[in-house]
Each structure stands twice: as structure tokens, then as C-alpha cells.
Image 1 (cartoon, rainbow, N blue to C red):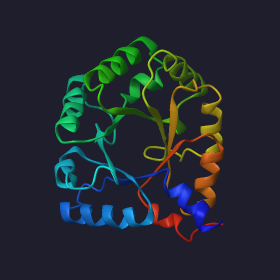
Image 2: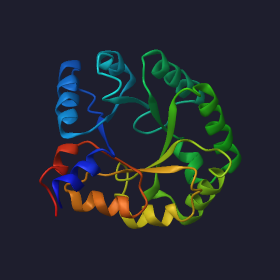
Image 3: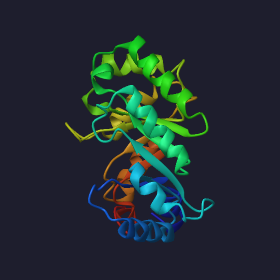
Image 4: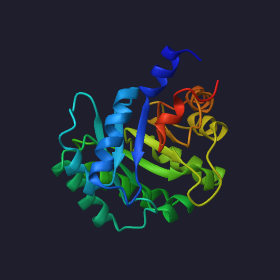
Length: 220
């Protein structure tokens, strides 16, 4: 893969800074390093947003991670976190939906949760994260149907936190059932450009990873 192709991939990468022990100084240094690679998006816990407020907004889009990692907070708590993301200058937020509702294919309850979250911070680019690898085909299909009416900017197809990783094949399967108005952000380790390209070819629009640097010089 050429340097141009690698740069095109990095431009579609969001670096995740979700180590709970990361210091503000370390976070700023990591963002600066990733920016030099061409990464223009980062995801952090809300408490770090203030520390990254000095990052040039035209160079780095900072997003807040809401109810990470498990999504077990109440709807009220999630809404408060979204409002904090707005107050602290985030441009986007990734919210972990209540896993039990997604797993149980509770369409009405999911509609209520997602509608409330989107209306809380309409100025934010709001994404909803689900552990797609754990969902049954029925639960994932019901979720895709709900998204025909409730449309976040992205669905983040995470996997591997509590089960097997979510591979490109599962992303492709979900893309075929999802309205085109909703984009997909695929979450994976991306040890090299080959895996990253596989996710993009499967229909992902954005790539989320803890290690964007692995995309430089890794994988054919």
C-alpha cells in the first residue's frame, strides 16, 4: 500500500484515548503525535475534554465518550454527560446504548433512549455504540430497523469488550441492513493497513482504534 493510500486511511481514523490512567499531559502528547500522522479525530473521556481545549479545532475534532465502556448508566446520566461534552467544547460524542435493551431487541425502549439522547445535544455529532459481535441476527436487524427512524450520525460497531471481535464480515452484513443515512464507525485494533482497508471495503466510513500508529508501515 502506498503512502497516499495510508494517508487516506488515517484521515478516516479516530484515535481513542480511553486508558483511565492517562494523564492530561500524556493525552496532549498522544494527540500531537497522531496529528502529525494525519489523524484528525480523537475520542476521550469527558474529563479530558478541558485539557484538550487548546487543540486547534480546524485540525483535530475532539469527541466525548459517554457511558463508557459498559453503557449501564441511566438515561439521565447519559444526557448530563452529553451536556458536559457540549460545555467543554466537544464536536461529537459516542454514547454506549444500554446493552440489555439492544440485546433484547426492545425497539420501543431503544427509540425512547436514542430520541432523548439526540434531542439533548442537537449541536453535537452523536454516535451510538453497540457491541455488534454479541448481538443475535434478530437483535441487530431490529436495531437497524429502529435506525430508519432514529438517525444518529454513526453507529459504532464495537466488539471484543465482552466477547469476540467484530470483523469486517459482520460490518458488511450490518451495512446491508442499515439505512444509507446512517454511517458506520468500525472499532478494531487495526494492526495494519490491510485490516483497516478490509473494514472500509465492508462499508465502514470511520475507523476507531486505540493505536492509529500501527497503520503506518504495518500490513500490506
